[in-house]
Length: 113
Image 1 (cartoon, one colour):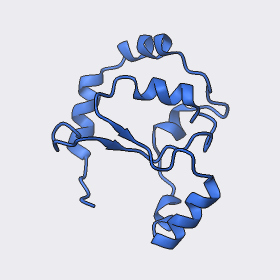
Image 2 (cartoon, rainbow, N blue to C red):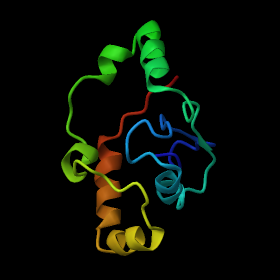
Image 3 (tube, one colour):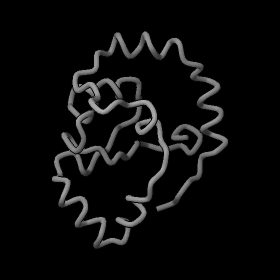
Image 4 (spheres, rainbow, N blue to C red):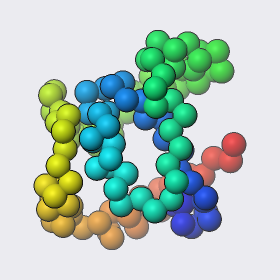
């Protein structure tokens, strides 16, 4: 999507230790293949401060709407906190990445902010 939209960077809502899987080691593994700058304005923000801000700007109710995503389906109750890049790459080689990307691009919606 970033390539198609000529984005100069990616903005994430990651916050270290917000959830068990958001450790620096895991975030490094997730971001490893990304060629664009990653902007994470919430990276050191406390969860309650994020919630308070979301309430103030009117996005909180949207953020708590239940939905099924890969995390709720694939991640166990105790996610890894120290992902190993070589293990992740080995698993990724078994995935049909191109087909998954095409499917995701067809469903993608762009929101201009």
